[in-house]
Length: 87
Image (cartoon, rainbow, N blue to C red; front, side):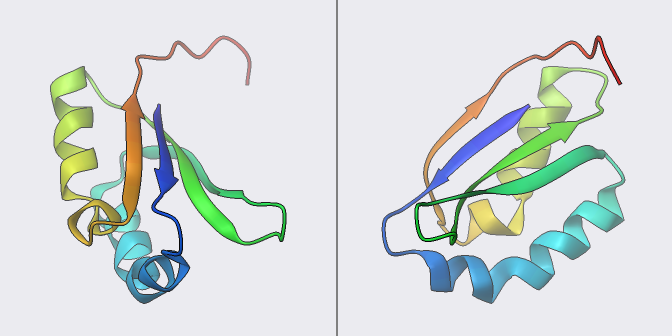
């Protein structure tokens, strides 16, 4: 699971790179679930992305090459191994 928080005031960076980010998700085929975190105003401010990968090296590579990451959107990222139990 990739958990990110955007840099303060970076909504426009997110919006400018959203199409490339979504195309990357589609092209790689590794995303099981994904969606943005929302702030108090209902604006996107981070992401939760659940990847279906064979190991952390693949997840790290995916995260590093995400157009959002390449655009410098994130103030913080956390990549954690997660085990699906329900769903």
